[in-house]
Length: 131
Image (tube, rainbow, N blue to C red):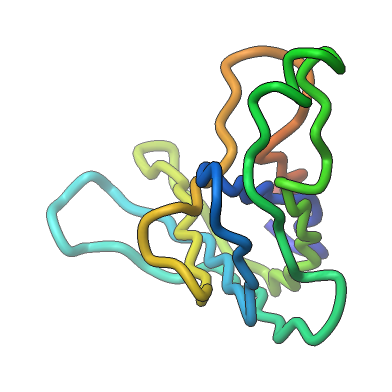
């Protein structure tokens, strides 16, 4: 892999009464050969947020009345992760670690909708074939 891995993650405020602020986030891409504690970092992307980082409480009545589109309780964050000539073997798998700091430790969920829309977690990984 060589280039910029780009995409997004989505955080969701699951509280019905608490406003939450996200102060920073880090997304790290690892490779592993499925041996416990044998992962290698491929790339990372970290950002501090100072604006547009507040999520209002989840509003069930508003969400149902508007088809599930209460955008103020979600936060879509970009990923632009440089990857510099990392070789991935056939037997290795890739995984993401998503970390963030917030004013709540229980109300924030990482979006993972099991469908094609919306793209809660999406990353395009640059592929550079060898040979």
